[in-house]
Structure formats: C-alpha cells, structure tokens
Length: 287
Image 1 (spheres, rainbow, N blue to C red):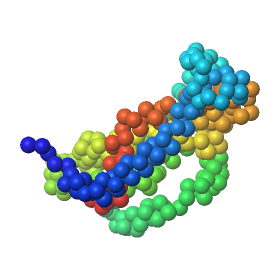
Image 2 (cartoon, one colour):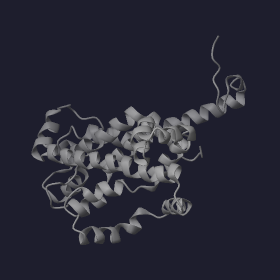
Image 3 (cartoon, helix red, strand yellow):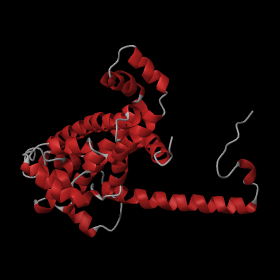
Image 4 (cartoon, rainbow, N blue to C red):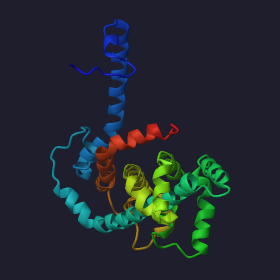
C-alpha cells in the first residue's frame, strides 16, 4: 500500500487545474531562487581558474582551462594553512563555550529555576531585540581594559553568551520529564552532576545544532576578530581575506582566497542542512 503524502498540497488536490498551475508557479519561483543563490559562488569558483588577463578580457563565465595548480600556488603563497589553523582554534573554543556556558544558563532557567529566574529569562529574551553592532564599541573598550585582546579568548566568551543558543537549550530542556531529574537527585547526583551526566548526554541533538550554528558564526565572523586579532599571528581566514585589498594580490588571487573561505561553510551546510532548517522552524514554536 502506497503511503500518501501530506502537506499543504495533497495528492488528490493535484488533479485540479488551478492547483497544478499554482504548483508550477511555486516550482518556478523555487528554481529562480536556487539559481540566484547558487550563481555567485559558482561564478567565483569558475573565475578563479582564469589568470588576470583572461579575467579582465574574457567575457565567458567558463575558463579556457581548469588548472587546480593555481589554487595550490595561491594557498602556498599566502600561507593559508596558518590562517585555517587559527580559524580552527577560534571555532573549536567557540563551540565548547557555546555548549557549556549557554547550556548551563538554560539549565538554571529550565530546571533549577532560582528566585528571579523569570526576570533573567525576560532579559535574555529582550537582548534578542538589541542589534549586536550597538554593543561592539563598549565591548571592544572593555576587552582592551582587561587585557584580553590579541588572543581568541574574547571570541570564545562571546560565543558562550548567546541569547539565541540559551533559548534553544531551554526549549529542549523543558521537554525532559521531571521524574527523570528527580530520580537522579535521589540517587545522589548534585545539580552539576545532573547537568553533566544526565542532561548533556541526552541532549546530543540540540548540542549538534548549537555546534553547527557556532561553527558557522565563528568561521564567518570578521569585525570582532579584526579588532581583537589584527596585526597578530592569530589572524583568522576572514581577517586575512580583508587584508588582501592592501596586498599585492590581484583580483583572481583574491577570488581563489574567497573560494578557500567559503568551502567550509558550504560543506557544513550540505552535511547538516536538515538539522539547521528543522531548528529554524522549531525555534519559533514553544515546546
């Protein structure tokens, strides 16, 4: 027996000419959106195979040859391996702080619920309405005052203070049965042990989602790493990519550098697009 599909448009609705026309329009809009979204990275990738003369004079999108040795030369010339390593350090610390610190705050708001927890939750929710750029100046001033500039520490701590991650964790923790947590306390678990030995091991799905968001945010972030890590040996890929405008690199070499910078996010989204889209939908639904 064939399983009938559900959704906004059901199978028996497709027999209607009006529904067929509407479905064709939806498909056409989706195809146009895909083309508009995919064309820029494809153009960057194909143009990076050209040399500077072909890039300036050749109107065709497709290069005359596909020589991957050009990418190797650009990688070695600008020492991209070191910047990839720096970005890896930034991403790793951001993921750990995003899971541990935001998870602890969500644990307090969802399970422990100390006096005044509703006020704290309201402040966390209100902070989502504040644009991040409005706090960049006082944040940078405080980073310099306490001497945290020149290393990844501020980037890690900022990832551990993200209101959106706290809300995602809290929604997930709210679904845990109280009997499970009470049984753990009866067995002698402290509050911290309940978090580390019960909640976190059972929260792998949301931890994976938070890690995906943290990786993408830490890899793509430019402004704060530029302010904190500029002119140090810890510059990330995005910071170095910005500095190419003042270097001797030509336009094609900059395009190859852009290709190097967008490969990890593309791979990440391709592997975990289902988890990302499902979380974006469920984050607006109170569980």
